[in-house]
Length: 436
Image (tube, rainbow, N blue to C red; front, top):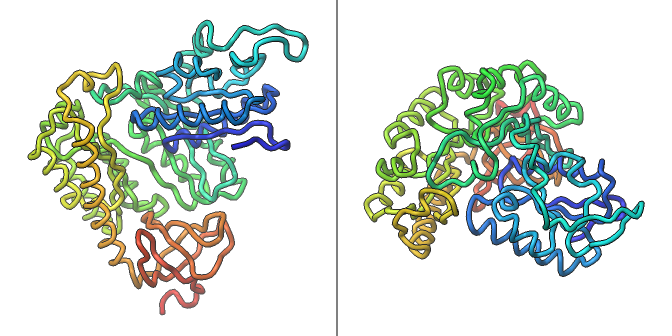
């Protein structure tokens, strides 16, 4: 874990795609501030394990990089500022992490004293968070770097719902969206540098525009006016897929046939206690409609195992949801209580049970995915080649490994010849052979 002399700022992103996108803005802000030998941890707090990993990484950096400035930002830093500051790291809040001023004239508690210009600085652990006075700033699009074939484009942050298990609103505030024009400009930047697939992401992506009177469908239509070849959407709330967005998901070929839904559970009582806005039958019906309109759509889902009060019958309903909704890409994790959330005060089922149930869900999802991948053998698909020239993803997000290398960043037609675990083996084919 080190920063090169050529690049004095190292950014380590944890967690979601939005953090990956925002990490590039963090890097740019720190560079603009002129910092040197600095490592910035852009942390996640979706689970207690995510926070533990951030703490572990910060401790390691403080131990192994005694001369470096160590900064912590992101959701875990927002929720556990005192703990990170006590370690000796500087804390920058989510709202302020993309601002150069957050990194100017700063020093961590272990690097007290004069710096350039002889300015005496106060320890970062004292006083208010840098975000105070910046709270609820308008959101600017966050675009990941040029070092990947795909571009992650953050268009929204925060959440205005009140799911009982989630600490996101505590870490990121209420929902705020970037303007359509600003998002389009960022997308054009990605296209200009040769990235041919754009992935829209956000904390609550389907709520895009609620704060400004527009909609996610309107944004997607604006992006499709650009010469973007592949547009993919991150996790969507099933309750927020309106007619216009449904039509784009099922009828627009440049919108990839891969729909990831924030389902969270498959039992109505658990969904009620989570304060979710859909019910089991709603999820099943939505996916039936999606697949009826566009058969090749692959379904992904977020699922939580071991939510407070979840009994065996409730868990069985969530387990059955994997088959009932044809979930082939599961993002599954055991429930962990987050301080300050209503679910943390509910009767807990215990971490051991939650982990066992999560493992059962993952096993069921793996079997479903492998069965689905077997149906892909023999198909001709289009894939985006990643930077290694040997891997990528098909339109439906199936992972693909090439038998022979192709030019990184290109979109090529391949024939899927076999399944190898959770990925497909593919052979590039010439355009004239596609119909063969």
